[in-house]
Length: 167
Length: 182
Image (cartoon, rainbow over all chains, first blue to last red; front, side):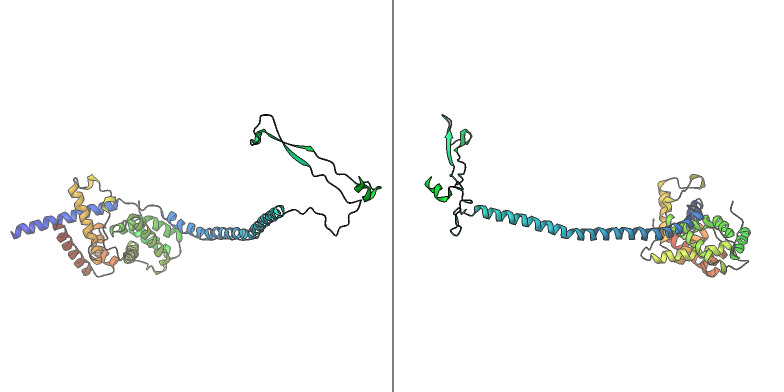
């Protein structure tokens, strides 16, 4: 029994040594990947990168700063455009307010009428004329006409205000 | 054809006296062996390549410490041993230092395993080596994977020959015990 165990241990021991030899011979076939000078070139490339990369990074950072600065410089213009738009809208509202306000066509009382400035308008009469058989409520068939628009009657400068009244 | 040992010593003598061309020739002659040394100690291909580069760089920087008459290859292996140890120390979390058997080309004409069981056995043995204590692992790698003598192994590991023998004996016992479980 003891002899068998010794033989077994020997056989296992030899097998381990054989396997170690196989691994060792397999390692013997491995080659260093790359010759020495190529490996030594790598640090040089790294040095170049260490010089070039900060320069590129600095330039990129400067470009970003310039872009940000330009956007800030454009910002007042944008605000101005917004203010302009608000002004336009404000003006439009004002005009709308003016147009909505009732118009005062009366002659101011403190303004003395004179023959040179006074003009009398005949208020034009608008009339709705519809073609025969047309529906008055239909906008397409309705024609608006301005039948009589009298030109303003200028007072005779020689005749004066009284003569106009007489007429 | 790599230069002979005495040629390597001569190149290292010249490199130590300031001849950079001599050191370049020595590096070209020794780089494959240093790479295999790192592989045998469980580093992967990329790590082993970096360890080789680091070893040659340290040798160049420390060429003034070279003592004329020493063995250049043993001196380089000693530097490589320190580099490998530092790499493992920096990866303290990675406990296993198994050799990547799958990546090695084990050819049939040199007794490669024919069946899947034998290939698995090689993988298990590699795993078992990786889990050995560091000194035993180094002794096995130097003695059986790099076929170094006890004297050279002691020089590389920086210990006495008796320590190497004891480490090898304990390592084989541990490997036998581990492999018996499978």
